[in-house]
Image (cartoon, rainbow, N blue to C red):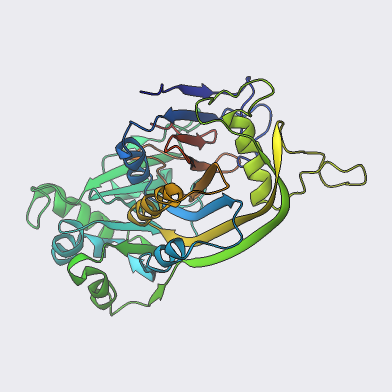
Length: 380
């Protein structure tokens, strides 16, 4: 059995992902967690982390020594769930018994307020567990009159509150004291209206009925977008699956790898040429030159079930011999989501970062990196 290591990096120590976590200054606290799992450890631990990161807007897959996206990966990308943008939807509509019974209790329904700023506006998220999370300013909280908790990231004077409503609880039904109180607050006392991104699992045809259910509101369906960029003759870090911390003169460590990966995503030249006035960054050593590398990027409202399907397919990539020794998938969460992993409160501060990266090796080992910015709990 191969070993498993876990490392947390905080402000004041060297922390990787500076390109991925761009916008964080030297004095800002941030957290990066790196974890290695051997080939004998099943994928369940990674799957649980993926399932808990509910709201994702970009997935990037990097495959060295590859000149095109493998057809199986393209097929999965094209089969990702459609999502909907509901315009000016009153929040009390999510309390309707028909909606709760059809979408919340019988499947997994995701909803996130669109074009709202977590540090300035009222925001809302419906988790697949059936919990409705409202992050509201002080005035809205007082007007609603619902029970909540002060935001963890308030200053000395509390200016933001978190209200949680359990839509799937057996007691949350019309006629119940809690139900009637919440309905009155959201429909009569302080009607909150949002543009919402929504996605429900398609089992039983529920996704089709999501659009038909809200026929009285403007509803637009979208498909996640797929784009591809081929990197020609580029330097890649040398990684050893057993050396998460790197090995002198033999391999780079995981955080150096995240630095480099961020530069690749930003299309930054890593050659550190003398005539470059944009960047002095260079690929960490040791490194190797690859003829081609394929970068596949998916953008949209991407739910965890689709990402797990991608991971399952990527694990099969090395079933046939390949020149590459590893591939990488990186998932970025919405910067203005009220939660990051699970129900952990998330704030913006300078960038609202919440992301994770999985490196899959040809020997079936894997690295998992999770990172958040200043105003977020430590990843699980």
